[in-house]
Amino acid sequence: MKISTLLVFAIALTFLFIAPAFLSSSFPFYSLIKNGDVLDLFTPLILIPLSWALFNNASGKPLQRKETIVFLILAAL
Image 1 (cartoon, one colour):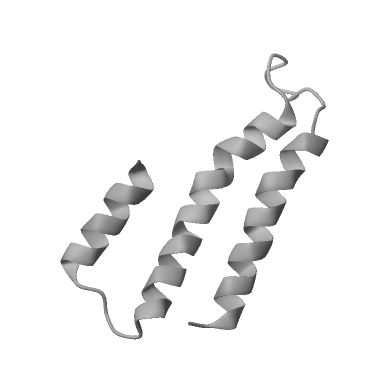
Image 2 (cartoon, helix red, strand yellow):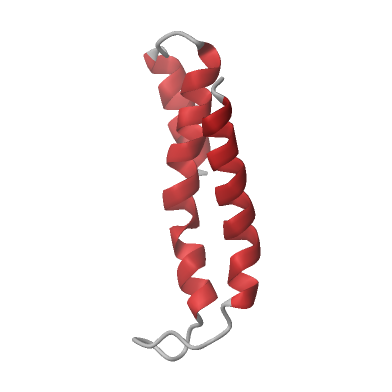
């Protein structure tokens, strides 16, 4: 596993976990939600591909179709 992929994942996870609490101002295009809520919407779009990169790099060989399908099902849940 590449350390850089793990480091990027750890930084992104930490940022996406902590940052919404500090973004309490109102979202300019829709005042009923906060900026932190908007950032929460992007969390799976950022973390799922990074998780896939970790999963793909951990095996050291190309993944089989079965492993890919299982990962995508678990990520969707």
